[in-house]
Length: 313
Length: 313
Image 1 (cartoon, rainbow over the protein chains, first blue to last red):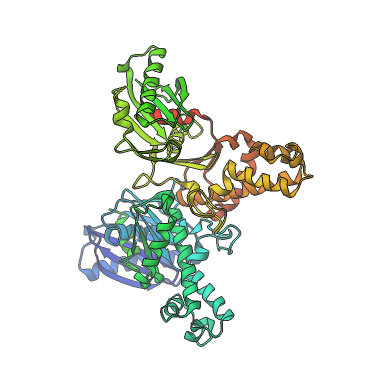
Image 2: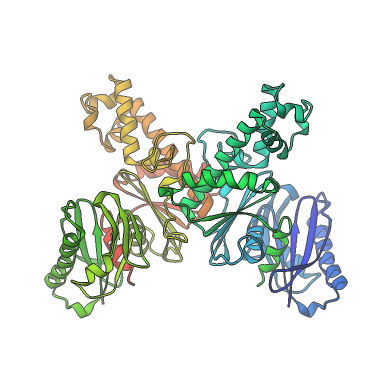
């Protein structure tokens, strides 16, 4: 049997066909055009699923299920997307709407949880029963896998590891609190701090890398500055990794998974990120004994599709 | 069948007989005399178990198991107490040693986890599958119950919720980090802040309650001062509850249990603590929707004995 996974994003809808082993064998994406009503968007999603089935030359009878990973707050039990801010969705019946076009079991989950499941089934956390995947992007997304299954608390609202305060009364967070981990460990946070550093240090190597234009700063720039020997860049990276490691140690002290997987754009830095991070986490875990492995994510953007597909397995 | 639970503390060893329903029907305690070697201490523990069986008039055949709740780092799988600072225990084979005196299955767990299991089986979290019990004492102890069972991570080192940083670079913690939740939310933290407040405000109602003697301050004093209308006392309590609630909201955002139970000496304040705490937690949980219940612990010191007993069930 095959499993279809759909990654519903604010910009694109990506769908893929995944084997029982979690291998992505076909992928296609279309623009979400999110200003439309949900009926139109879900019609496109259903047709996209049928298209990839047809193009791959398999029959609908060979499709076990469709899994959808969505932003916002899904209700997995009832297949309803309760709320998704960037899609302007409120109580959208994903399952019943999608089944109008493709009549197989439909599963729904949070996209960060899907990415974590993807990495657990076929990526960096393959072979581990308990893992946490942290995605460093606009925010800090998190997914907890316990005993091979997504753990999202008692009311599907857990796993929001990016929203635990590590700096009381700190930077304002989009969630309304102050000092959430994501306001220090997301790519957005690193870019914010780099912009401030450029303004404060206009003669620094960091500032020169972007010709003084703070709008040209992305998460890679401060790493590049640090590697070129710029002390301003190095301080930024040291601070970023300090806060990233602090939050990871917090999560380990509470959940202690076998492995923490680091995903998102920032993880392109590979060992430049991972090695100093391990040192920080080691110093910060309870009793100084780090038994949890740390590893860079392996599946990139495919993690969400693969994990969504595996919801039906 | 009956289940024996033992709470191994630095001062006393308490043992009790517990029914299948989690009811404590007999309890007795002896001094630990912790400067002795482990063989002597465990001999006393074994004899204490035999004594309560005899006094209760039941036979050894009716005892299903003995469970021991210990401080420090137990290895529940092998029944070994890997490390307990206040007992000077290192790799002590609790199971095999205790079985020399009472030959039934012996289980070992962290004492905070036992207290959480006790509250889940027979106390404030009875009837809930997923709960977190927070014990506010010298430190902040924590126990996580998922699906009715103790959850302690992949290597028995999880559930250390008191040791997640909420104030980066904050107050020094006994664990070596800075700004752990327990340095703001323990009874010890409240007493520390109250002492500082007395020194700073020698004319306050708080200071008058203890005649200016900071050594007379316990966790009840600042609550008493607040209730008598002293603004210094009120500020202390407001701040204490702010940090307590911040950490509880963090735990809920990550684990989202059905219920959080608050135990330890501070919880004697009842609604004076619980009502303002609920307000803070509600404001701080992700998306502002608090589905998790908050409740005061019901079993007091018996929670540890009952939970330890229920390890064998």
